Amino acid sequence: MTEAWAWGRKQEELADRSASPWDSSTRRPSHADKRRELLGEEIRAALRPGGTESEIQAAADRLLSLAA
Image (cartoon, rainbow, N blue to C red; front, side, top):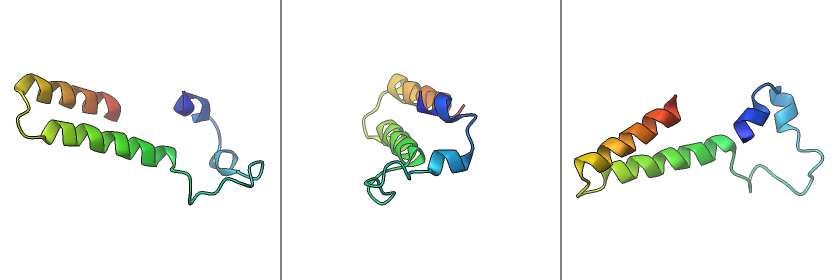
């Protein structure tokens, strides 16, 4: 939903936090940070020892759908 809302907006509009002076970029992960974390979790799940072929395939499918 966040990506859909932000898709057509300018970077300046998205980065303007003046209405939230208590908010700082040092305490708030970006959307990109959250996405990297999600991808990392998926990769670690696919690489864990003992995974079955179907589990690895399902993880690969999820990663490909996230990259699309």
